[in-house]
Amino acid sequence: MLVIRRRAGESIVIGEGIEIQVIEISGTRVKLGIQAPRQVPVVRKEVQLTAEENRTAAQAASPAALTRWAGLFHQQQES
Amino acid sequence: MPKFQTQHFGRLDYDPRDVFHFPAGLPGFEHERDFLPVIQNSTKPLVFLQSLSRADVCFVALPAHMIEPGYRLQMTPEELDLLGLPPEYPPAIGPDLLCLALLSFHEGAAPTANLLAPMVIHLRNNKGVQAIQADSGYSHQAPLPEPQPEPQPEPEVQPCS
Image (cartoon, rainbow over all chains, first blue to last red; front, side):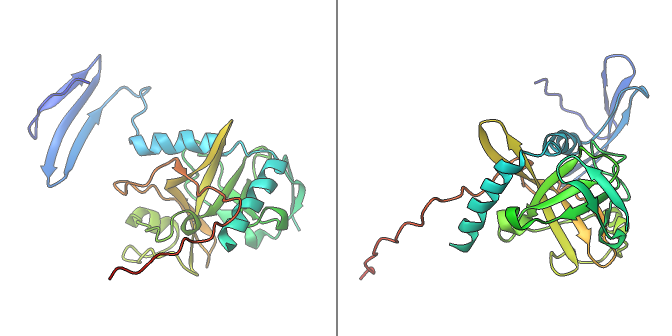
């Protein structure tokens, strides 16, 4: 991973047309400004992880497997 | 009574008042807004969230506290607004706020729960939001508690003198 030190107000440029500026640093948080071409999606990493995980989760397991699994989980809760 | 043909449950007749409405959709499913909670005796305590616009989209969920006792929920003012709640509302899981973690089932591996992004539903109006817990340290693939085959008797412990 490329590591670059930047101060508030400074920027980095990625490829053609993507610029990330450090706008403000306060405590443990950094405010970034991002300019990117319209076709380049910019999302927070946790939103992307959630979208990927939602796609996996939407493919529910077979009803038989779920029934078996739920039974085991239920026993465990009661024990 | 409205009906919806589903892939997993066949035809569901439902009461529109039972539907959970997600005004902002979900990441990856931005167009899915309405989900019907389905609880079956054979699969309790699982809660299914069946999309009412796509027959093939059905999530499986468990209350977050069943996976992580003491699960702590944080919500932004924007998320609270989507639930029709004021910005200073304390987002405590309880009779008014349901917090469900979506489960993922993997080939040849134990299922996991998404504690990073639980579904939070305000039960007074059935509005919901998938509230991403940034900075929380919760995992999007938290291991589920392993079902134990038989509870083992506790070994006798001698008190320290």
